[in-house]
Image (tube, rainbow, N blue to C red; front, side, top):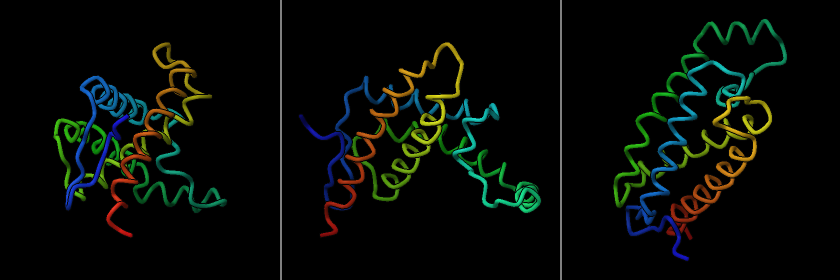
Length: 146
């Protein structure tokens, strides 16, 4: 089976069938929607920094919530990267980050989300698929390091 990502010089070749690209795009949009809704599943994108509730509240006032908003925007824009046949190293790094964000939210969603369209089994399967893709992408990014 051909790896979904492979390194070619200063770029990463994307060898994903259209259906898999569509699944990833829809996953990014779904996770962006979950995060934007303010549900408890989004906490993994911006975990608490302190054990002290006062310090944590001060951090929230400084803009932690806007951090989630930034991630939501990146997820919504990131789906466009999957239309390319090759990505720059910077774009590949961003895609790896976005795939990881999706996995973080889906790991929480496996046990907590109650939306009919995202059953725990579906969230788990999607989590595993995105993990496989992330692993392949990281291996491609590291292939010229050693």
